Length: 388
Ligand code: CAA
Image (tube, rainbow, N blue to C red; front, top):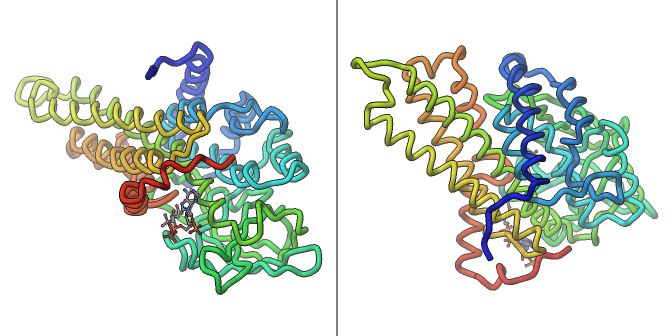
């Protein structure tokens, strides 16, 4: 049976997130965007009301929310501000490899840390010369007795400047390509240096940093999954987090659509509100359809995970379509506002800047198409069950 009806609990969760976005995020979002300051007060409140770390299992102090629940929350929060939401949700990205590959002890220690008090964790995959091409990474982890020693730099790391621990991918067999990468959970210490905070076009309230590991030592027990199996762990993580990114993109698109719709009813040109002109009506109609389809694709990709099924294809469909939609709808919203849309005083200017990153992070729209093409041409992969 196919049924898109949310349960009463899901409706309440969505309402909680919407209320928080409306009262705690929207009123401050444009201010945080201006200076690119770290919205710690918003994070404290979000942590207190239980809108952070919703993915963490009850065994480690979290609510163990489903992937669909997570998407409902992320769309609402991102409707408020996707920059703040990127930072609010980044613990989920860092935690997924721990939940998938960590021992019971490691899960208790690191996932428990996030639910005991407000703490941040970062996912360290990308490097200056290894973005889309993950296996080109140069960070090294060398085993010495019962520990690993990590050296290398990671860039574009969300919350990197504030993280209490990191999930780090490094080469343990540099000659083996993607089969020589391992994943580790690494607590912050003095050997880990934050080199640079990026000054970004959009999502300016989220922290994005370059991090260097200088002879950073971690116990061998901090290896996530098996040695040299880190690439698959990264891919399985992205399968699990791309639905949430798609939900965030849907939130941006919905916000832009709502602003454009309201404005089109107020703005009078040629003697009537511009919403009376068919040129504007068709833009509004296209926006409405794209927001609707983004949400459907997002929910579909999340529900498959909740059913324990592999969702590689569907999560790339959702991420690709919702990200491109966010950019298209935000751009069209600026068009509906006309010259005013280009002015910072009006809300859609920020949304257009924020939307751009959705087509870039967690796999560009081109990488999503690559995954879709491979999954379509080699459907065998899609039939493999989701591991864990
Ligand atoms: N699940 C499980 N295994 C998978 C998989 C999946 N979804 N996708 C691939 N694999 C496996 C393959 O089966 C293959 O296994 P074998 O070793 O047994 O052959 C192996 O992984 C290699 O797969 P590919 O040949 O497809 O690998 P590739 O080198 O061609 O790369 C890619 C594939 C899709 C391009 C991948 O590199 C990719 O997703 N790149 C984008 C990376 C990305 O999204 N980066 C964003 C970082 S996170 C971020 O943005 C941070 C932030 O803070 C917001």
